Length: 171
Image 1 (cartoon, rainbow, N blue to C red):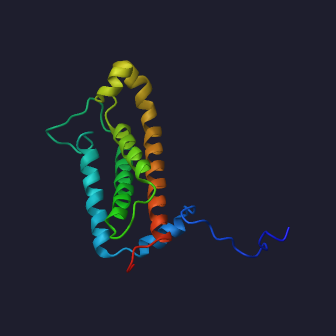
Image 2: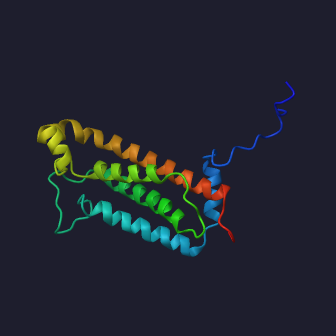
Image 3: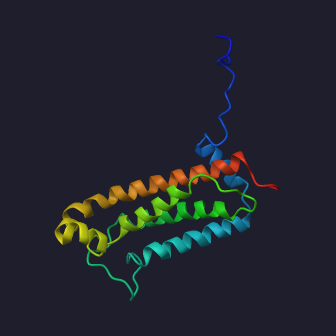
């Protein structure tokens, strides 16, 4: 009975167990301008890596059979922002590998499938055919986008909270 702390005493979380946005914001406050420049560059690269092959960004190299949907643009923008933040955590010198790498990778791959043309995706066409891609895959794509963003957000929180729990020397 005497082993539990008094109700007024806060119990500190175990290292790495806290995934709060408040802790993540604290980690972001420690970032220097060079790291923010890297985040911006990574986000812009993500827009190109995802947006060009999916033809959200029109180019002569790729086309779409189905027009870009309205939700593709915010999904791409949020994907770029979150991917930029995740990749920016790797920019920090002295930071050991932190959790979130696999979640971020899975979120990035899912975002590519989410915003791509449903009938231009060879894998979906092989599995479902053209009719299945339009009837089954296209309506699921917004949900896939939400799942992708959830994975990317979780990965970003994990990486940022790991930085807050164990900041690099000189931070």
